[in-house]
Image: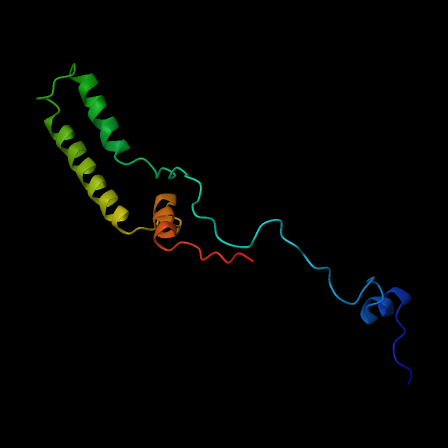
Length: 123
């Protein structure tokens, strides 16, 4: 039995005749391929706001009691406890060097690049 018959473009493509030369073109980068000495400063993306519910309950209590702190002492205490817990959590997260997305902040990258500079080879 005879083998399958392919269109002419398939045989040219498989044999490599569709290319001008057999080797891919050489890519010459405009600058040397090396890391820069620093990266751009980027602002950290803010996380979601904490203690919004506690704050709104406290403000509603103030509004109902004509901004009297004595009447809303429990709500104020709950709000301050939430703020302290959120601040502690933020400090623990800052000790981890990585952001929530798993990337180093630009300030830490710049410190590392200053500590380990690029080795330059000039011709």
